[in-house]
Length: 215
Image 1 (spheres, rainbow, N blue to C red):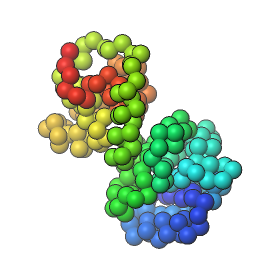
Image 2: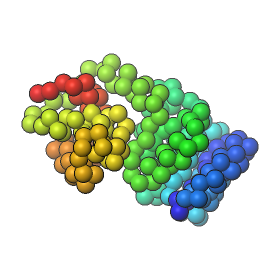
Image 3: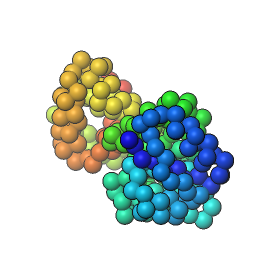
């Protein structure tokens, strides 16, 4: 069972989300919060697996709540669920430690899937968020030297990660065992001195390695 706290300043939306999530037997809403501070307090009391975090809330917003939760409870995953996909809001969410970012317009089943993926350690971004990140990153001139020695298989895996695919999807795409994908990603993170899949996706996009470019 995945334990969830919902943080949103609009009560009817909190209650509505709780009712929607109750349809999935693998999900349980254990707390509701009206702002980032209440979300942090619910995390302290309930110890959830995932926080569904709105970004724009009065006084203690989603950035404050996400950063404080990650500071005090780093094992808790933060999935931003908001109506805003502008560059400033997305950047604030990522800087505060969010593990994923999706929009409220997303279909219910995809919200369920996103929660489960984030809980399993997969960074999740809605399609419009990913496109916005890609536009921003490819517009910047990369300050990173391109690494030598990446294999064709590693480049293929990096491209899949940049497209937001999880290990199972990558395994199916490249006809590999899921464990092989997981091991390859771990080796890539070590080789490129990166922390997680999000940084690997960003690195891949910044260096245009998701466009089929080969060394």
